[in-house]
Image (cartoon, rainbow, N blue to C red):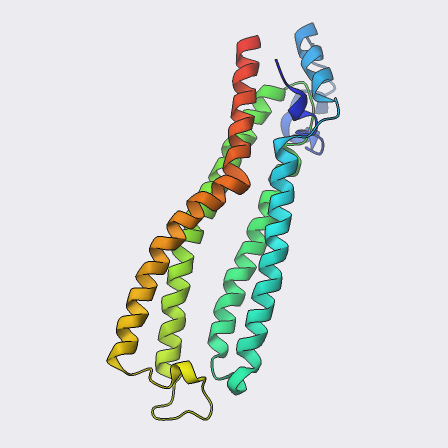
Length: 223
């Protein structure tokens, strides 16, 4: 059974969450098979959890930087004509940061090596899958939603027949051609964001979760 990849999986999990018996001073019995698994888990090796944490941290840094630049742009450009777009981006960005901290906490909890390896991994892995599913759905929905909300903001805040305080791309905001182009672009963005999120979520998280599932299956075969 190849369990080297689980070396770091349970490193930081708080014992009181999973070991009420230990809190009461009761030491559970450990079979030789469990000792063998625990020993294997402690060996140095690369593991899926570490990769997920690295991908999550990199993605968060990129999003914070890009969102900050874009928000600053909408706050300062055209004398703050479209500051609401900056607020919209700020809300989305803040939501992702909250998601990052919650998911990162879960990943740290999955890096603990203890006697209840299989049961704890199954429980945490199920929660991790929910996080990734939420990430996929929210990313697919929020991208086109933010696009259309921003379009509505521009529509209602663009002064008619004025080009002095607004960008050139918005000078014909009330034109029929603009609405057609805007709607077609929004639909294309919605479809594109779905397929992009399928690929992106799998590349960053899905394939590593599948590796953990395979390791759980190997543990089942050894029981």
